[in-house]
Image 1 (cartoon, rainbow, N blue to C red):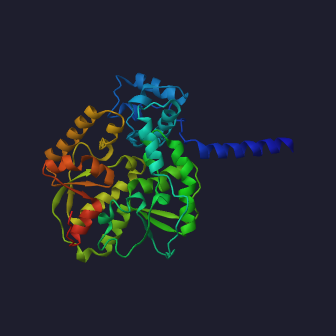
Image 2: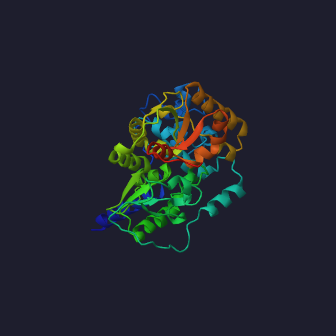
Image 3: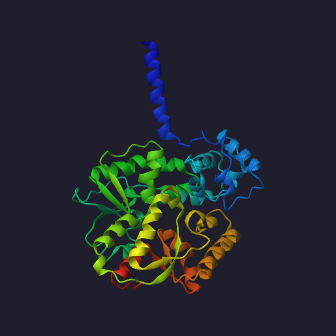
Length: 362
């Protein structure tokens, strides 16, 4: 009887630990031949696989590594790993442990406070049988991107109680995400949301990837919907209203899309419907380049300019008419530089609105 009690206690402890810690799976690392998570990194150079393996081994043993300070938190290693082991979970956990990134403490503190959930949740009257658009922290700043046929008939929620907080991966504060995750989930429960359309790629990543891989329990009847899936289904149902745009697009994937690469299919399907060619440029798909906005946070302005110039020149060289984003922050980061090259900037939802015959005044 005593042995059974001990076993039960151990099981409970393990479950609790899984909620607190990132679930990095090291089981395949010892026999991994490619060390893709580090060898394919666009920002950290390794001379050989042995050197890369030595660094991943250090991190597996919870030791300091050059990776922790040289990482620019673009999440790409998660997609590069062929085993789905989530190496970035390990990196971000250790970055917080060792304070590896040179982020101004005042900036860090201010950002943590800025996106803190409200103490009181104001509930809205919604129909739980219909999808709800989550405008999260973009409810005011990007209101103009959520207008027109695609959005007018949608009920919505917004505000910091529905904000995923995954941006703190860039601030080496994964603990903040875990601390606030129950508050976000509780808001969805209290609001009675069953299907939620996530305006931001990162929001969908929170529900579809971050919570499940960290064993954070979600409501059993809750379903997140990626904004691009919603856009595709709407367009599919309104094909007779579509006017082909016949333009070439350079697509800028967001960091958070690395957690949910399966959603990239919706971009291709939407392009086919609205007559847009996604140019086969160097910095797209698995080889996508971060918008480099985070470089400024890390005090690497010289590296930021170099990376952004390479990315934008790649758009120009492949004849893109427009640059298209799924993340408003990516657009904010490089949009002005892209515009100076004669390329127009849009969120993908903006292109869909144009294809439906709407005029945009921005």
